[in-house]
Image (cartoon, rainbow, N blue to C red; front, side, top):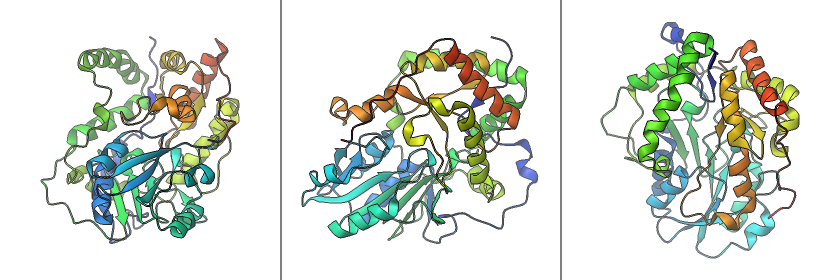
Length: 381
C-alpha cells in the first residue's frame, strides 16, 4: 500500500491544543447546571433512566435502527424495550406507533441520526398528548439545533456523546428534568486515548505516518478477531464512571462556535461531489445540523470500504450488529441500513485537500465497479 494520509471518522486532537485559551463559550448542555458528564453516553442513559423512574414496570418505545449500547443501558436500568420501525426519511411513523401504545408504555426514545435533527418539537407534543416521557438521543448530534434551540433540550432527558464531536478521550453528557447525582468514582487520566487522538491528527497530515497506520492496523484487528465478540461493543461497564481528567481539561480549549458550521461546510462540499451516492434521508443539509459523518449507500459496502483504504480513507459501516434483543428480520428498513450505509469523515479538523482525498477515493472505488442501488425504503412501516 502506498503511503497516504490516513483519514477516519473520528475527530482528531491537534498538537497545539495545550496552548489554546479556554473558551468563554460553552455549548448546551455543558452550560446548564443540571448537566452531568460521565465517561460514556451509555452511562448517561442508565443514570437518566433511574432519575426519571423508568423501572422494570416501564416499556420504552425504541427505534429498531440503533447502535446497541443504548439498548443495553436501558435494559440494565430495568426498563423493557418495544421496537418501532422508521420511515424512508429515518423518522418515526406516528400511525404505526399508535399500534404499539399500551398503558405500560411510559417513554419514547428518539434518535437524532448523524447530526441531523428529528422534528423534536412535534414528538414532544406527541408525547405530552399521550402522557409519555421523551428521551432524546443526541449522541451523534452534539451542537445541532432546531430553530436555534439545541437538540436534546426538547425532551425530559437528552444524551450527548462529546468525543464524537471533539478529539477528547471520552465524555457522555446528560441533562434531565431531575439531575442524577454527581459521580464519586475515581477519575482516570485518559492519557493513552489522548495519545491516540494526537497520533491520528499526525496521520491525517503526514503520508508516512498515515501509511504506517493503514498498514499495521489490519494486523492488530486480525489478532483481536481471535477472541471477537460482536456484542462486546454494547458492554456497559460501571455506569458511575466519570469522564477522564484529560477530557475535562481539554474540552474547554476545544469547544468553538464555528465547529458546527465547519462540519456543515465539509458536508456541503462532499455533497456536491458525492450527492448521487447518499441515502435520500441525508441528501440535503437542514439548517442547524451538525453532521457527525457523511453517509454513502452501497449494496457492497464492505468491498467499497476495503478498496477505500488504499486511498487512505477509513470509512465506517454503521451499527452492523444489532442488539441481540432485536428481531432483525421484522424490521427490513433497519436491516437494510445496517448492511448498506457506511460513512466517511466530515469532522472540523479536515483540510480542503483532505476533503478532496475523501471524495476522490469514494469516486475511484465506485467507478471501478458499479454497485450502487437504491435502498428499499420507499414504503413507510
